[in-house]
Length: 195
Image (cartoon, rainbow, N blue to C red):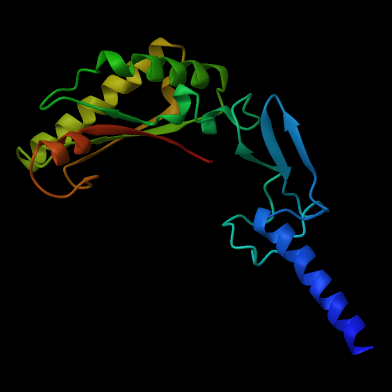
């Protein structure tokens, strides 16, 4: 009798270890769509509890999670890593509010998205590096944010969809001196509200 219990326990451990190394339960609904493996993470389909005991960093609530592959993204287009909409930071040259040519595609995509989604709104946060006076940097951050707003409006976005804020040098992305830090601080962040 002891040998049977031991065999059952060992078989259970082997079976569980085989499932847990892949992070997959037999009950999980896995499918592929255009080369993308999609795992159903709804509360009813997975064996993951609300406490996230699996250690994967994901809990219940998400209906689908892209695990691997390319293919078509099946979520909000703002979150598609292949879309220019996923880029929400525009950088600037020193003492300039002119938008760089390389950022035009990103801004056109955001402008079109806002024009097609009139209920969407954004806050444009202008930032500068720490060179110059506080007052000058606040004005420069505002000019940068207004330049971004103008480009987005040229694509059909409405002025009512925008909040413009300048933080000047007050909220650096990188601390310290030197061009490597300063260039990351000269930026406008596009923050979608209500997301």
